[in-house]
Length: 113
Length: 117
Image (tube, rainbow over all chains, first blue to last red; front, side, top):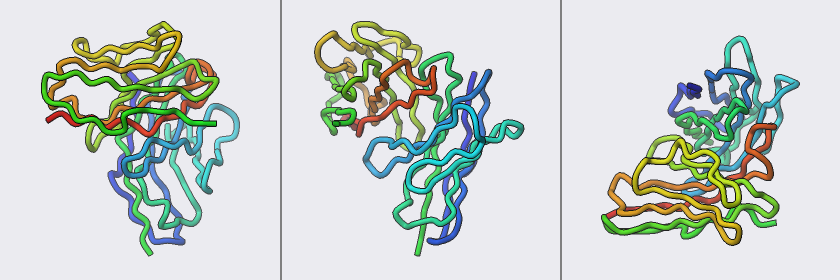
């Protein structure tokens, strides 16, 4: 069975500093990996995805993620955090054999001044 | 180009009543997915539908829950005889083709928050 782990419940960062939100996955076959962001009482907004190709994927709002096959990781990064980035971030995976995503439990990002 | 539309956004039901949640996919999308988010948890897949067909319902509880996506109209997630444990946010998503099979992104609606009292 496939699984996605987000080891940190919360990440605290000062505005202007770089941020990393961690994600590791366990899937059979080639993974399709996604990051979504959720603001309070809102739906999930797509940030970026890795399907194939370059290991560094660039997405919306200045976010990027690095696919590392040997470490089975897909960490989300941003060079300079903004207060408005504060939200709940979800990593998700799918192997492409079934049209459903497996989500991590989410990481709450708190960016402070 | 409207996104995935869900209604109602908030629904309160007493134990034993029925809840109906509606979802209109994005224009041009013929694949619909329902996910449930329990408090402080991630999203869990429930069901995947195409027009008039249930493709994968492996995440649906065996009893009281049903879903449909008729030829005309929105997709409906129906919960009969609701219990307190059904209180959650229910998210609908859609994609133009079969989900992630070809790396297609699925887009989520704003969610329907069900509270059972």
